[in-house]
Amino acid sequence: MSSGLLGCMTTPAQGSRIPEGALYACDNSKFGSDGKGRYWPGTPSWFAWLQRTVERYGPDRCLWALAPDCPFDAVATLAESLPLLARIRALGVPAAYAAQDGCDAPGLLPWNDFDVLFLAGSTDWKLGPVAERLAREAKSRGKGVHMGRVNSRTRLQIAEWFGCDSADGTYLTYGPDRNLPKLLSWLDELDAHPSLIAGARPSTSPGAPPAQVRRVLPRPEAAALPGNRPPAASSTPSTLPTTRGPRAPSR
Image (cartoon, rainbow, N blue to C red; front, top):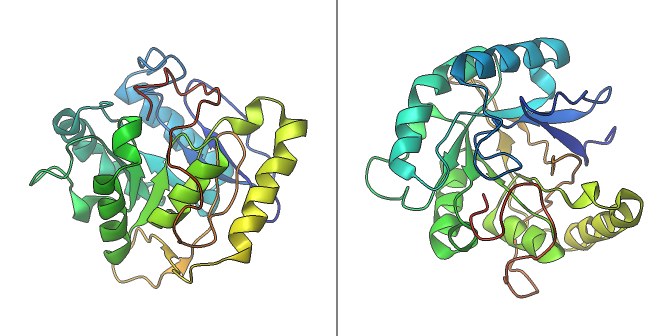
């Protein structure tokens, strides 16, 4: 974590303490470990939690905060997120927007109002050609890109190929002593073949010079995505356990 390779994802439901010096990102619990948003505290409580978290750990260590969304519903996500993106930016942290199935329809991605595109939605959509195209468009617009539920070497390769700056997953939650060496070995493989696609950490200030991207896989600990090249393995969805919810309707 001290090197910036590993970071933490935190949510209103977790109450996790961020280790000293670690990078972190803020999810919103709208999907949650049950896949039904059971732990969503409501907008006022969520924003109060986010404000406390940023004040406690600092905006400079925060990769982004995800605006409240409506999983698998692109139209409802726009209505839910749009009023809150500016409030996130006002805290001095990048605002992330959850891309859902169908969000490529005209008018459903408020590009000017967010800093990071969070690839959410169903597994098939998130790993498919539309998500890839949107990820590349986001990069061309100077946005960051994040992929949720990355719990395998193949998923990590796909996220890297899409150009993602960060990804999250619960892989280290299940047997961290055994799985941490595996995760680090995957990162070594990606580091050995960089794609030379560089990015910049999204800025919340218009006209501000970009800072170097700090790329992590935060849930709850994670790793950098060093480049962007085609996955060497099949894109079959992972069957590893995850607290992100049921296998099919995963973010």
